[in-house]
Image (cartoon, rainbow, N blue to C red; front, side, top):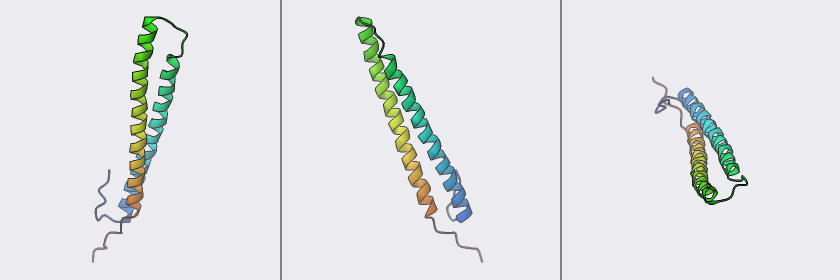
Length: 98
C-alpha cells in the first residue's frame, strides 16, 4: 500500500486504484469459495445409505458451513475495501510547497 498522508492527488489515486483492485480480487475469491461450497454440497447428494453415510454428511455439513462463512468474510472484506477506496477519492489535495 501507498501512504497517502499529505502526498497529494496522484498518490491518493494510486492508493485508491490499488485498494479497488484488491477489493475486486477479494470479491472474485468470494465467488470462487461459493463455487467450492456448491461442490461440497453436491458431494453429499450421492445415493449412499448407512451409518457411515450419516457421519459423512454430518461432517460435510460442518465443512460446508465453514466454507460459507469464509465466503461471507471475503464479501465483507471486499465491501470494506471498496468503501476505503471510495474514501480515498475524497482526500483533499496536499498543499503545494512554496
